[in-house]
Image 1: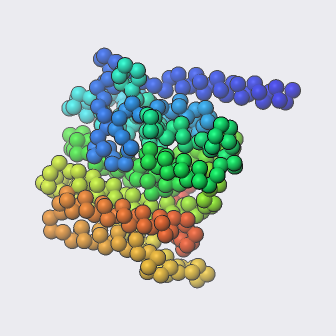
Image 2 (image 1 turned 90 degrees about the vertical axis):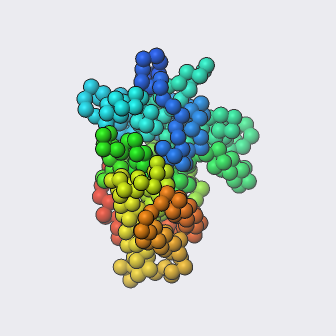
Image 3 (image 1 turned 45 degrees about the vertical axis):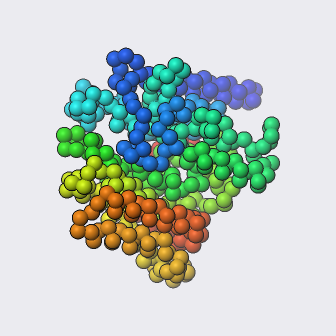
Length: 394
């Protein structure tokens, strides 16, 4: 009897998810603003997407077979709900002002929806910030969708995968543009590319989109509503991504330490890239340029504090790091000072700074990416407060 009840429950859950997926799409057509959406510009949204080709976006339902609980978790988040069907174009909103000025909602879709393309070229957008908005477009002949969870020939299970096959699979997925949990810095940049806004058309005075979201901090969201770590157990939302934990052995605390650092590095690099993509040098005189520079300064202030604690921990039982260990972070701080000291900042200088920060961040991940030597940062955990939103536990 118990098995029968469980079977019925699984069927009911599957039916519910099927029904829910039936209304998660908004289809562009004649007369619908979504029909005018253009391919995403790498400079107007972010430079980290594999491609702006909307035919490579498969949509959330492509993930449903293997990620049922993750899908259900997504349906309860602001990433799903804060979308184009809530733009309220009948009121004086940012979206309405943008639509009236530019005749489409292209810029809105780039962060509030996932672009897709059906057969015969028909274009539409999937409601919400979806799986591929965060993890990268997965389709196409060279896409990662059909490769990322294949552990070997035929029915090879996860625990049977050889080290060489694993490495080949991961290399392929990385080349295909997959932004997976093991690539923490890339994940942080993907988050920042939408939670910081660098598009002058959006943040101009007549549209009024904020440059950044003052309440956005990465860890409270990763520990809160966007936590969806079910892959090894669909009934348990683990504290860390389960496959990455299995492969690398990082504890949730170690991952949080790394994210504390990479959040600031990503914030700085993305802001520098947005400064580099301003329409002209005169734009540095505008309010939004000042705000972007302020974001860089804010990230540098956090890094400076973290470096100080790593070199001289508050807890005498925690071993200090030497200057060579935090060299990548001091490079970023020096780069900020160099840019900040310019009499007239330029787009070329911002682009150079972004490249230097990116290189330093990757150096940090190579040396400190397991978080084991960052124990001194644990004193900051209480500053982040409670996780944001509800955590789904099926």
